[in-house]
Structures are given as structure tokens and as C-alpha cells.
Image 1 (cartoon, rainbow, N blue to C red):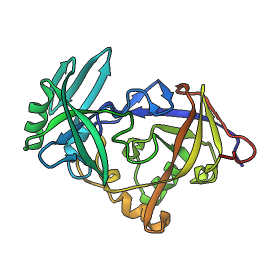
Image 2 (tube, rainbow, N blue to C red):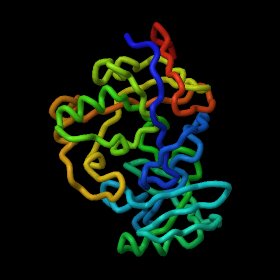
Image 3 (cartoon, one colour):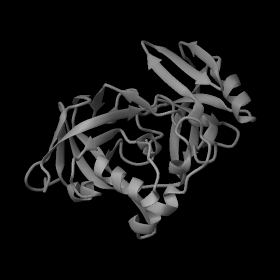
Length: 260
């Protein structure tokens, strides 16, 4: 059993479905990484949070949320302002789950509507993690990425999996992270409880910069990672002790499973 490994990369996006951003450091709180998936593009009339797999051009949008200013590159146009909360609340469908959102006034809605060719709005989740599919943290490993690259015959950009953390597991076996389920993982100043595998969809076949379709990674992965109808890659985790996490930090596993 591998006990000590280290954190190679951190990735977040202030905009749900937007381009995954590399960070050197992130603060984990009980509800997840601070600044991750704070905003989302929504369809108020249809009552939905837009899904990346249905609107892949969202991946071309690079969002930064710093010191109260939201800056988004939308179709090559840089749109930056301080979000003005409208006081208009919506309950929207997000993968069959009700998500409470507040519409954000400002220049973004018009630009997103132009990009997508339909009328949309920008909204902020009322509760942190409101537009997160599963648990607040996802983890991938270099061992698993290496196997997928070997099976597919192409270089695999880890951003396709939009993981919060990519852990360098050295020469460990592929999908070693499966064995971490039920264990606590100390990562920098934070502690996580590792959960089950992350189900994957066609988003991993979208170019992480442009949203263009062009690989068959999901089909390849299904050939050896199909479990009860789900194609799994990486693991979910929950934050059980808040703290700062920095790229290069050690990840430490206890010798026996935690009891929760």
C-alpha cells in the first residue's frame, strides 16, 4: 500500500463549466474549495443550470474571481466588473437536483447569450457547492492518467477530468486511489475523507480549451473501468478538516481505514 505521495496539480473554475484553471494554492473549507464553481450560466425560462456536455463552448470561457471582481473571457471578449446581486432568486434543475441561485446583474449575460446563441443569465449559487455534481472535491492520480494514455495511445490532458487535485503516485498501480475509499487523506493543512469513484461522461472527450469534440477517451475508459453501468475515473472526497493546500504538498494516508 502506498502511504505517502504528493500533490502535483490543483484545478478550479470560478464558473461552472468554464475552463479549468491551475492554481498554486487553494483553501479548503467544510463545503469545498473556496472560489470553485461560484457562478453558473443558467436558463431562467427553462429552469435549468446549463450543462457543459450540452454546451461545450462554455469550456472556452476563462473566469477569474479576485477581490470582488469577476473577469471572464467570453468568445475572445474580456468582460470584467463587480457582480451586482439582483435579489431575484431561482430554483433551477441541476442533474435532477434543485439548486437555489441568485441572478447576477452585469455585462456577462449578454456576452454568454451571444456565445451560446440563446438567452441566458449568469447566476450565483446561494449555497457553496450548489452546482457541484457529487462531493466537493475530486482526486485523480498520475498512475491512472498514465494507464489511460497507454490504453488510448494518445497524451491525456488531465484537465479533461476537471479534478480538484491530481496526485503524483509515482510507480503505483493504476487506480490505486480506489483503495483509498473510506480512508482519511491528509493534504497540506487539510484532511479529506475519500469516498467512491467519480462517474464520467462525454465531457472528457471535449478539448479543455475550446470544447471541440475529438477523442474517444470515454469509450476507451469504458473498456476497462465500467462498473455497474458507470464509467469511473478518480475518486470523490469530502473535507473533514479545513486548511490550505499548496501544489507540492505531501498527501499522507493512515495505515488503516478511518471509521465514520
